Length: 221
Image 1 (cartoon, one colour):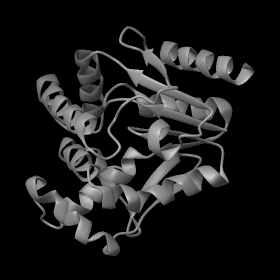
Image 2 (cartoon, rainbow, N blue to C red):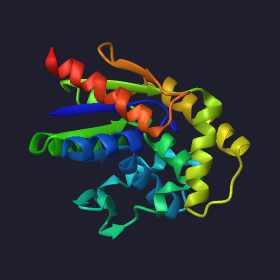
Image 3 (tube, rainbow, N blue to C red):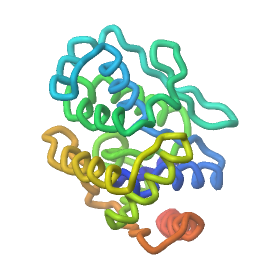
């Protein structure tokens, strides 16, 4: 089984994908974490966000992989577990920037597809249904209004000890959305055969149940 969950930042993709993976007993792959790891590497190399294209010349020195356990997905950058370090607003912007470059996307493409060849998976990201897993049996494009997304993201960041405000998160989110939506390579848009799920007025459990209904309906067909 291959299930693709796409949508903008803060819509709740990661939570939904994790919950669905637990429900169906299959692996959850957070593909955005791979780009965040590349972004973290760029930041550590002292590359400014405005010059982040320089990362394309450093890819040979980067090894990014995913490890799976009962606790979920962990992200390894050159053998170091960076799962928590990649979740800051700064690295979010780096991730959005590096994801626009074809060499970076090509670098990570096979890593993502190889996991899906070996396992039943639920992948969440920006271009899963359009590029990474165009043959996925189920494609969901998860959206929510901007304010709701920013508020959710702000809560998540504060739970991780990152002090920020809804206004700061919203500004970063809007900038990242524009970058992701308008990039030339693999823009963050819904696949033609994706089902749109707007969870602006739904809590997590309601979002999960709505997604399960979509999946069960498609599988029965």
